Length: 264
Length: 296
Image (tube, rainbow over all chains, first blue to last red; front, side, top):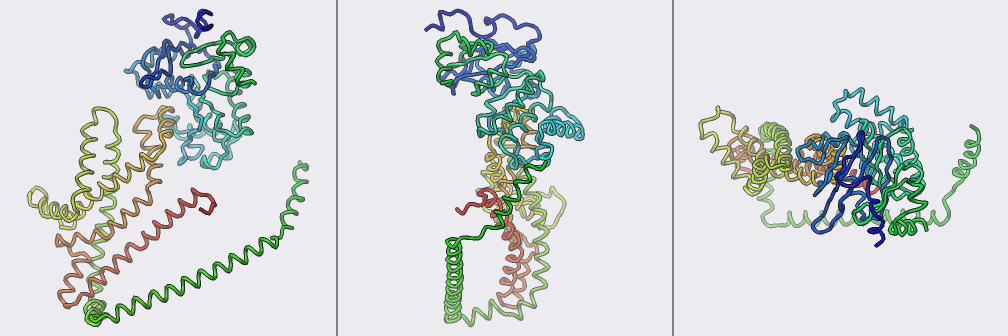
C-alpha cells in the first residue's frame, strides 16, 4: 500500500514528542476497541488555539468515537489525551470537571424536552459553574438573541424547527465558555434547507476564534471553514493537511478514493 | 414593506372563496349517516342488555331475600353517617400513605440506579426490598406491622391506623419504585449523555434531566397504582381501625343486614372515580399529543 511508503504523514507529530506549548488538545496513541474490533488505532492529533479541525471519513471510520473519547464520554484503552497540558485520560481526574471545559453538540441536538429553550441554555452555567440564576439567564438570552431565537426563549424545544433546535444546542454548548467545542455531524439529521443556518452559526463561531473539532460530511463547508482537514479511515489518521492541499492535491491513495466517491 | 403583504390578500381571498366540493359534501353526509347509525345501535344494545340483566336478577328465585338483606334503603340511610365518618379515616390514611409512598419509592428507585462499588449494598438492599415486598400479600404485611411491631414495646403507643399506613407504604413503595425505575430507564440514553457532556454530575443529571422526564412518562401508571391503593386502604380495618369497612361491619352486625357493605362499597367507588377519570384523561391527552392528529 502506498500509505506505508509515503513516510510519516500521520498526525501533527510523531508519537512520544510533546505538543507545543499552548496546544488546546493533544492526543498521543489513543486506542479504543470494542471486543476485537479496533475503532481507534493509535490516534495522534494536536489542536492549536483558535484552530478549526474537520474530521472526515466514511461512517465507521472512528470520527464520532474520537470526539466521544476527547470528552471522556467513552473510555480509551491506551494513549494519552491532554487538555491544555492536563492529562485528562488519567482515571484519577474528575471527569465532570473536564467535560465542563468542553462543549459538545450532537447529531440529534439532544435538547432537554422538559426544559424551555432558555433553561436548556442556562442549565450548565447554573448547575456546573454555579452562576446565579439571573446572570445565567441573562447570558443565555443574549446568546439566543444573537442567533435570532430570543422569541423562542420560553418555548419548549419541540416547537422549534430542526435547524433552530440545533442552533439552540450549539449555544447551549458554548454558554459556559468552553475551551474546546466538539461538533459531531451537527447537520446530518437536518433537512437540506436547514443545513445553511446551522453552518453559518458554526462559521461565525470559527471566525470568532472558537477552537473547534468537528466531524462532518459537509465537504464544501470543511474546505471553507476548517484550518486543517484530518482524514480518518479504519481508526487511523490517513492524512492531515490544510483544506486547499487536502482537496486540491491529496497525497494518499485512500484519500483520493474517498474524495472521488464524495465529490463525484 | 409592502411587497410581501401585497400578495397576501390574493391568498386570503382564495381561502375564503373555498367551498367544499360535491364529493366532500357527499362524504360528510355519509359520515353523518354512519354516526347516527352507530348511536342508534349502541342505544338499542344497551337497553336490551340492561333489560336482560334486570330480568335475570329479579327473576332469580332468591332475589327477594337478597334485595332485603343487601339493598335496604332504611338501613342504608341509618348506617350512612357512621360509614362516612369511617371513610374520613380512610382518606387521611390515603393522603399520608400516598406522600410516604412517593418519597420512599423515589428513594428506592434512585438507590437502584446508583453507580460505583461503594453503593453496592444500597443497590442490593433496594433490589431485595422490592423483590420481597412485591411478593408478600398486603394482608400479611398489615398483620406483621400492625401486631408485631407494637409488640416490641419499643415505640410509643400510636393509633393502629398509623401502623396500617406504614404497612401500606411498605408494600406500595415496592410497586411504585419499579414504576419509577421503568420510567428512568425509558428516558433515552442520549439525554443522559447530553447532560454529562455539559459537565453535570450523576446526581444533577438524575435530578434535573432524567427524573423530570421519567415522572412524565409514568404518570398514568402511577395514577393507576393510586387507584389501587384507594381501595386497599380499606384493609386497615383488619387491625381494628374504625374505617369505612370496619364501620360497615359494625352496622351490619347491628341491623343484621348487609346493606352497609354496599354503602361502603359505593363510597369507595365515589372516592376512586375522579382519579380514574383523571387517569383516563391524562392518558388520552398524552396519546393525542404523540400521534398529532392522525387517526390510527
